Structure formats: structure tokens, C-alpha cells
Amino acid sequence: MKVEFTLLAERQLENLYNYIADHSSEQIAERYITRIVISCEKLAEFPNRGTRHDDILSGLRTVGFERRVTIAFLVSPDTVLIEGIFYGGQDFAARFRS
Image 1: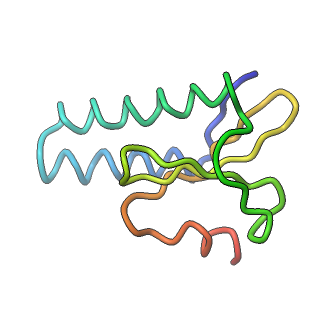
Image 2 (image 1 turned 60 degrees about the horizontal axis):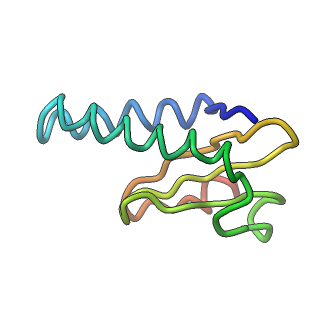
Image 3 (image 1 turned 90 degrees about the vertical axis):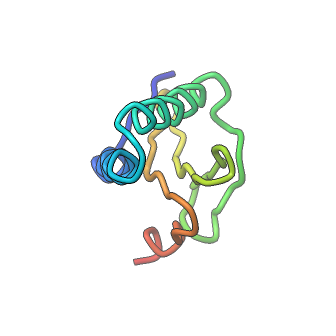
């Protein structure tokens, strides 16, 4: 199974990196983003983990990361598609309901 990121998820990671780098350091930002990506890649090992949100979008699942990030993803037979990386209190449901 492979893990892929949507363009939105890639942009969200980039924006989060920039925010952390601006408010802390590039090294801290790099380590944090790397940990998020590794967490996403581990979904390939057990893709059906997390909380289902079929009421929002059929097949949508989320997992938390270090109590500050919500990773939203869809699972197909051969791919885990990372749909979004939501930091803090961002409303991930709003992204899928629009």
C-alpha cells in the first residue's frame, strides 16, 4: 500500500512549516513536519485505523497527531490518500462539507 498527499495536504504542510519556522526555527519546523509525514506514511501499515466520518464524506477517516494535528484521509484498495493536515482547532469537517 502506498501513501499519497493531495495538493491541499502538501500546501497545509508547507504553511505549517512556514508558521513554525517564523515563530520558532527552521530546524524545529523541519523536525515537526518530518514527524507528521512519518505518521502519515505509517498509515500504509494499518490504513483502517482512526475515526470514521461517513457523515461528512463516505470513507473519510481521521487520526490525531501529538494532540495538535488532525490528519484526514481516504483509503482505497492500494492507496492511502492524505486529504488534509489540520492544525490546532481548524475545522476539518468544513473543508469536506463545502
